[in-house]
Each structure stands twice: as C-alpha cells, then as structure tokens.
Length: 557
Image 1: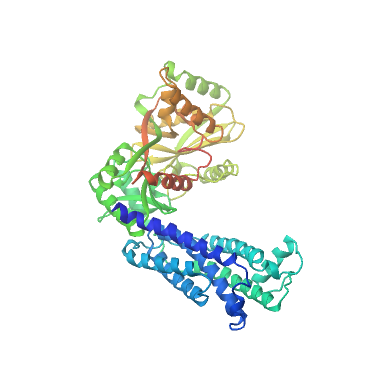
Image 2 (image 1 turned 30 degrees about the horizontal axis):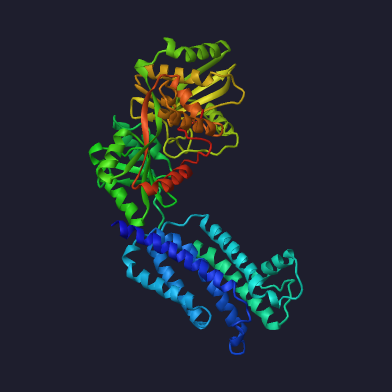
C-alpha cells in the first residue's frame, strides 16, 4: 500500500523532469546544426511549430506533474495526450532528440502500467487558476524565447541588440508583430517569428482551457445545511465550543447517512481540512468520519483536522488512524467558579476598577435585542477597527458579524461618555455557554477595556444561567508554562525564547499571558494528519485557511 501511494509521487517528479528536459533540450541547440538539413524540404512554419510545440508540451508536463503526484485521473489522461504530441513532434525531428523520444516512450509505458494508481477526481477550478496559468505560461515561454535567441539564433542576429530591444522583440512576437531585432537570413527571421507567434497562441490557450474546463464544484454549505447544523449544535449539550463556527458559509459539510451528524471542512491546497470536532450525535461521529475519509480518498486529498479537542481527537485517531499534535489551548471560564477575589485575580481586579473609575461602562445584550441603529453602528465600527487588516479565521472564528440569521449571538459593548469604544462578539455554545468570536476596540482606548468587557460578560452569563465562557486560543501555551517553572531546562527555555522572538510579529505569548490572568480551564486543541510526511503540507494548508499571518489565535485582542 505504501509503495502504491508513493508511485504517483515519483511519476509526478519524473514527469516534471521530462518536461524541464524538453524545454532545455529545444532551446540550447543551435539552429543551423542539424536543422539546416531539413530546411530545403520542410516549410518554415512546420519547423517553427514543431519547435514551439516541443517547448510548450514541456511546460504542460511540468504543470501536470503536481496533478500526477496527487493521483488525479484527468492529469494522467492529459499527460498521455501531451506525451503523444511530444513524441510525434520529436519523431518529426527524429535525428535530433533520441533521448527525448526514449524518455517519452518510457514514461508512457510507466503511466500505462500504473494506470490504476491515478483514480482521483479533479479539484474544482478557482477564479485565480486561469490567471495563474496565464502568468506561468508567459514567464516560462518568455524565458524559453530568451534562451532560443541566446543559444539557437545568436549567430543569425545582426549586431548586438540591447536587452530592451530583445524584450520588445519577444513581446511583439507573441502577438505577431515584427520587433526591432534583425536576422542575417530571411529563413531565420521567419523561423523566429513563427515560433514566437506559436508561443503567443499557447499563452492564450492555457488560461482559456483552465477557464472553460468543466469540473463539478465542491458543494458549499446551503441554507438547509446551515439550519441543520444550528439545530444539531444547539441541542447537543456536549457539543464542542467551536461548534457554531461550523456554520461559516465558506465551509462545506459531510453528513452521516441520516444527517444527524456531520463534519465541516474546506479544501485548501489538496488538503481536506476539517474544523473542530464533528457535530451532532456522538454515536454517529464514526459514520461521518468514514464518509469524510471516503471523499478525501475519492479526490486524493490529504485528510486533516484543525483545532479538535481531546474528545473529538480520540474518535478521529481511533477511526481514521490520525496522528495528533498539540498546537495550543483554549481558555474557558467556568462561570460559577469565577471571582475577582483573591491574589491570583489581583491584576484583573485592579485593571477593571481603574477603567471603571475613568468612566468606562460595558453592557452585554443578545444581538436580537440591540436596536437597529446601534446594530448598524456596531457593524461599521467592527469594519473600521480592522484598520486595514483582512478578516482571519477558519476553525475558531466566524466569517460574518451581526447578521439577521444569527439572532442567538451576543454582543458586549464598552462605552465612554456614551460613545462606543470596544466590543466583544460571542456565538452560542449549545444552550448554556458563550464562545468569543471577536474582540475589538478603538485605538487609543485605555488599558483594561478588554478585561472590563470579559468580566461583565461573565457576570451576564451568571445572571442568565450560562455555565461556560470560551475566550481566546493560546498557541503553545504548555511550552510557555513549562518554561516559566524553575525546573525548566535550557532546551525548553530556548524554544520559549524562539517563540518569544516570533511574538514580536505574531500574537503568541501575549495571548497566553492575557488568557492566564482570568484563571481559566485549559482545553487542549490539536491538529490531526495521516502521516508524518503530511505535516508540512497540512500546516501550510491550515495557515492559509486561517489567514492569520499575524498570529496564532482564536480571536483578536
């Protein structure tokens, strides 16, 4: 099984090298030796088209290599077609590329022998793929054109044209216009013109093919799906605190057969990334996981989980054979145990008292109870207080704020002299808890405003029979905690110092210190993946999905 999985990877790498060899082999030989032997037999446009096609097929093979490595059936089919075209081109000039012909034949035989390894459905196109394809085609074919002029046509060029002239000659050649570079013979000039013109056609074909190819898209969460998710997470009292974040509209959902359990996910860079624990009936979680793995296998995606708890992680490990890595802890306040009294809470108590003396107040309300005018102002401020930073999050935050479809969310508003200075937005955690989605404040507000809002939110929760309030996610909390102990060794402290350095750019240590002030319970969060070799790919996919280049976090301080 291990060999079967590794074969497509090695075939993909070999295909990339064959494509690279095709390009280099066709741009590094001089035009007149031995092509002149065919000059009097074949028309110029046939030589030019054969040369351009050989380079273009090399480019396509390099692009298809990643699809082959991911076991995509469409990539396998297209590779065979491209290799056949490549082979026909080289047979047309058989005396010139015996090694290239040999490599193409061997690769065709290998692809045929291992055809059953390439079974996966293609990933849906994205809006950026045609642009990426266009950019890649322009770059590769422009470089190939430079190398052609440098190594194949150098002796035929009259004079020593500047780089600007060569650049203009290539760009104009792509659109069929004669440029400022001149050649000693009419045939060399025609050959260059036809080659560049063919490149120009290929540059247009690549994005057009990527745009018009029809692949069934990944179904996004429908309104019916979202209503069902809300229903399941509301009535499951053991549901994870991240359950409501499964309703993000940019996620898809996998259901058990009776739709009583499911898993929210997104496909990111070939990784099928689930967020948090499965939701719904616990006894049906294995069925949802089985369906999740089946879909990942069907598309040859790497299954992974971001931000699951111990409870969910145990099920994933048992039924999917995942590897679990601790990535940090979520801070959870138990409402009935929370108090500002005592020495451990001295810092919070002092900051809250100080901010109140300055005139700050805060109030927690259900979002549906906020008047429309204030709702509109809060939406405006929530956008402004991003200060140009894009919304981030995937597994531990929402993709929307204060919408009519989320009437059970809560808002805590801090004011000074009647003006809104800060806000905290909470989503429901089943029927007896709150989970913090965002924490924002106006720049220049006094320190302690966040502490004030959290304390007053907990008091609101106590008065309304809510039991838990989930706060920020603190990455690598256990490492900071171990490093703070007098028994910490140099390795532990060294790792802490590395994280402390990155804390200058990302919110790492500051989130841990902020959370710890409230004496919370810590809920460990994990990232899960199938094999050790998958960790870099999964980590990169998770970073892209979370969009938090500015820090490992659940919510923003």
